[in-house]
Amino acid sequence: MNEQIPKGPAAEEALRNYFLNIGYFVARGCKFTYNRFDVTDVDLWLYARNSPLSRERVNVDIKNKKTPQALERIFWAKGLQTVLGLDSCVVATTDGRPDVRNFGLQNDVKVLDGKFLARLTKSAKSQQDRISEEEFLRELNDGSLGRLGGNWCSRYELSKSRLLHSLNFDGCNAWLEDIGLLLSDVGSGTPRWRLLYVTCAHLLIAVDFILREHVTSDLDQRKSIIDAGIRFGESGKAFTDKVSRMAASLIESVAAQPGLAKTVQQEIEDQASQVKAELLAEFFAKDTSGFFDIALQLEATAFAPSLPLPSTLPAHCQGVIGVLADFCNVDRKLAIQ
Image (cartoon, rainbow, N blue to C red):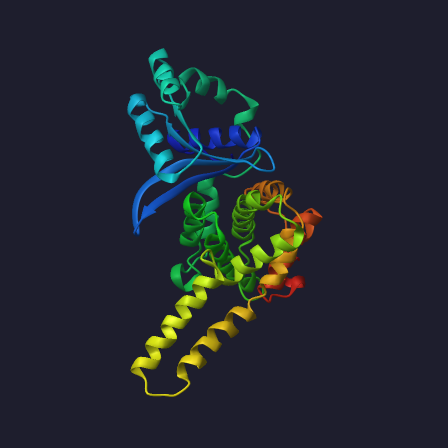
């Protein structure tokens, strides 16, 4: 890292680098919200593709303090894992007492204790040639006009939060909306390449998580599932049709205009048909194994000290950006420059 950052964030960066080095996708500082209330931050969120059929999601709680209250953190991390429906949790603490590790083992919580953290700071695995989260946010905020300029910092925080609870088609559609705004900004303002790369990475993690359930389906089945998900969201076409019928009936009951209900239903169907979901369905359905690795590459690119343009990225990364540009009606030549 290029600058000194406080003790707590420095420990989070060191551990992020450690988990990146052993193959996890890592997001730092994911806000967990409930009904628009910020409940807590997940220090690190880990994601791994363990096999074609299984994925691993982990919350990591990090306390680099003289009085870390390690036993309480084990309770907290385990409770957060349960609430979020994750697969496991980790507590990293400066506390080196054997009782802490034993208590963690009894409750299925992995504990990285003070001895491990001391070794980690001297290990090459805690170092990577990348900018810190603080530098990423500062660069993202430079020249920003808040809501008038896209409100990119808030969009980035929301993007990370979705990793906790929206690895589904609703989350994909929210990421696609952000990507569309970022790509349209390429030709009209200051390109936010770092945010584009990391948002694409988040989208690909969601796609990878969804595809784990459809590995054994044939190509046409996967295409159909992805097409419907992108077009109608997580609830699917049947639910969308039901809601549109209810809305049309309600409108017809209060507006004395013959045929208005049918017009409303037709408009909803027309809007759904205009979504280029078939482009993404064709692209994502063909590969059930490679998107995790592309997500890792795009995340690393987003945090690279010397930021590369899309045209210098590997072909598979360019392919993702290109198909997303096609979906968002943005000229590929602008998106890959």
